[in-house]
Length: 124
Image 1 (tube, helix red, strand yellow):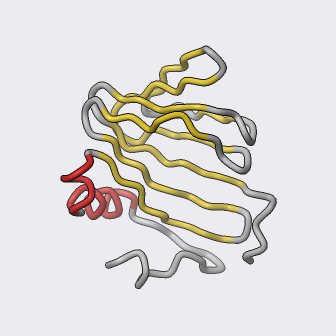
Image 2 (cartoon, helix red, strand yellow; image 1 turned 180 degrees about the horizontal axis):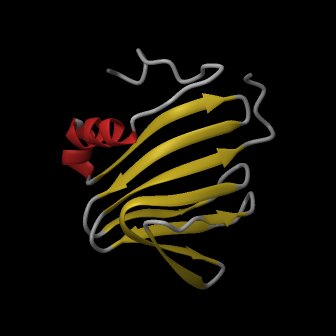
């Protein structure tokens, strides 16, 4: 189901992350670019995004408007910020402050959950 056709906000919701991952990896965008991002939840200041990177994939340096968390579901990744690198694998959780310039890289490919809490958001 297209992200435009599925609900992103419910009072209580349960998400099948394996099904979301399968759908995102099957999308044309992933086959063309080797990466994909699929918003799973958008609720007020909270946004949860399922991100997949193919082998050697990278998200170039960027900043988030609010604090973030990254939790690998498949594979490993390297989070770089402030001249330091942090390796993450399944079962670990990284958190970072709002506005921190960072990049993400994966040699083998990865799928991770990105949560952004944006206090500036007016949606709710």
